[in-house]
Amino acid sequence: MDRPNVFQTPHPESSHGVPSHDPESPGVPSYDEEPMGATPMPGAPDPADASATPMGGDVPQMSTPGTARRFDAWNYPTDSGVVGDGADLVGYRIEAIDGHIGKVDESSTLVGEQYLVVDTGPWIFGKKVLLPAGTVNHVDPLDQKVYVDRTKTQIKDAPEFNPDTYNSDEYRGKIGDYYRDTYGDQM
Image 1: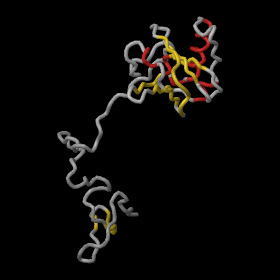
Image 2 (image 1 turned 30 degrees about the horizontal axis):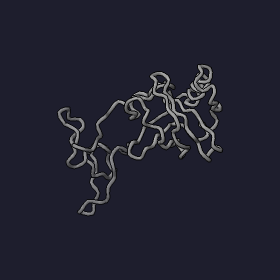
Image 3 (image 1 turned 45 degrees about the vertical axis):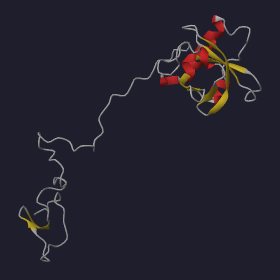
Image 4 (image 1 turned 90 degrees about the vertical axis):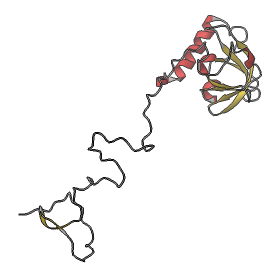
């Protein structure tokens, strides 16, 4: 039994009104000279030609994605845009992923102990929160905004700020662990 060549694309009748026939598959009308999909597009290089170069502009240049930064709670990320020691951030607005949370009331500039104390105003009834510098995503000095990579809920659920103990190693350990845990598998 003769089987039709299914790799040939049938086309409408020729200009003579009679379909052409493939000598290898008698009785199957086809106008393709090559198997389906093998005919290159007009103007495109032949992919089988080793000397052919890609068409300009139709394939973006490949790049290796950057690695995720490791969470360092008490230092500003190097790509955050914090210039110098960060002391000039007092008064800047703090923007969480999902909105405004308050203004910077105080900041530490000691390397390895950098943080922001944020006055939340009416958002959480005038309370303050401590944000480790490692949560800072970037700083916009023109708009005087600090963008952090945590949600309002994550910030609100952090260990409560205590003005008497917030500089202690124990409190900073709790805060660092809390924010490190909020990153989950991201870091």
